[in-house]
Amino acid sequence: MAMNDTTSNVEPVAQGAGMPTLHKIIFAVLLVFLIALPFFVYPVFAMKVMCFALFAAAFNLLLGFGGLLSFGHAAYFGSASYIAAHASKVWGLTPELSILCGAAAAAFLGFVIGSLAIRRQGIYFAMVTLAFAQMVYFIALQADFTGGEDGIQSVPRGDLFGLIPLAENMALYFFVLLVTFGGILALYRIVHSPFGEVLKAIRENEQRAISLGYDVNRYKLIVFTLSATMSGVAGATKSQVFQLATLTDVHWSMSGEVVLMTLLGGMGTVFGPLVGASLIVTMQNYLATFGAWVTIIQGVIFVIGVLMFREGIVGVISRWLKRPL
Amino acid sequence: MFELLGIPPQVLLGQLLLGLINGSFYAVLSLGLAVIFGLLNIINFAHGALYMAAAFVAWMLLNYLGIGYWPALILSPLIVGAFGMVLERTMLSRLYHLDHLYGLLLTFGLALVIQGLFRNYYGISGLPYQIPDVLSGGQNLGFMFLPNYRAWIVVASVLVCFGTWFIIEKTRLGAYLRAGTENPTLVGAFGVNVPLMVTLTYGFGVALAGFAGVLAAPIYSVNPNMGEQLIITVFAVVVIGGMGSIMGAILTGYLLGIVEGLTRVFYPEGSAVVIFVIMAIVLMIKPEGLFGRPA
Image (cartoon, rainbow over all chains, first blue to last red; front, side, top):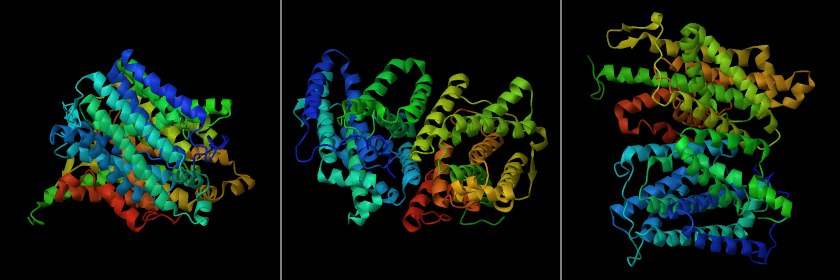
């Protein structure tokens, strides 16, 4: 059932060899680039890009490698954002603990929704996840601690481990870099683990995986929960950066955006979601003054992407280079 | 007057009526989704946007061309349905050989474009649309006041739902359609123009959404966001009912509207989420949906 026509023409990563040299080089270059970046662009913008890159990478774990299209990932991103903002502001927790709280909430939510959603497949799976995300949206709208339409505002930027103040953008930037880069490496590790291989097997042919004795539903639930947790880390981190959590984070359009980022960059690729997230966030940043046009352009990219460009940017490059990226 | 659990009957019946009206929209929209899904195997994410577009078309017909409610009730679904057929021919038809999830993604993108365009040109404040003169006012039934237009919504939706059910289940055309759902290749081999049938079916499903949009125009203000929340609720309705049967989609729509109305009486805070809670319960007990066939 998987959306696998974009990836099947790419050779699998060599087993037992650790990370391929090409990937090592790309990650190293990326790290150097990100360390230099805040000296050239506005750090808050760069942090936003990194948060969304982690979000898209977490989503890609589920769609690109698990073959499961969730249309409700805003639920995990947004609820973690709310919980982390609440933890920082009301409970007075330090940033790393707030993010852990947010991630734990997203993990719990992902486990509950995931265990229900995996009872259906394909299109129904997408609709079920979307509907539950809408339920989370309504709860965020009505619950007391979320502040309704206002959201949770002026969340303090605390001290990391209670020691290092993160109020300065530069200090916070390197913390966010550590969290998001670490998160993306963790996702890379998951994808290239034995667990990840079974996941790809299920994506390619679920019936065969069952006949080989794999408890398919257990794998699906684990990957769903993992993906939700990492989305939660991204959302929680974003709430610390912008010092607020709002309904935008749990809205269905956020779920759509992460699908778009992954599709544009190349689903089932390691670096695609990072590219997609960077492009979409940059576009939103530069076109923000055009209002509704941003939605229209995103819709058009969606349509063009689905009709003519299903491999995504990194997918195409990967095919040219004949190397998995 | 009698009271039930401390709830005055006016309140109870008033909410029941509101629930029935919401249910009418759920029924017509989920019916459209089910018709499209049956033959095309895609979920039309643009359904809500096209519902909204039809309400706008009715408004434009009135304000630019002076065409009133009754002609618009026919014309607007036809226009939007024709637009749907263009979308199907030019875009959706290219995706049938791929995973069905691409259809969902494509129609999601289309929904964004359609909504964005209307939001851009008409803002989000909403435009008024008058209730037609014949249906203004209401009836005093003694125990409650029944606005004529709301009664008309229920009657019209039941008529359309029954008509669609009759065409699909009882006519020769419907038999082709059902056969196409089972095995399109075989139906094609018998000389039926299957691609044409697919296009017309998509157009018909979209026209149903358009009909609901025109019905909604006078009671909800015509605005670009009117479809987006509704369609997600309708997705939940579709999951609960299962898309295996036409009658199932219709009944589930009305039933959930009424349940939602009752929840608003007895536990108002829960009314926004009750349908999703029911969906969770159905997924636990009967994952294929109330009227669905096991996969």
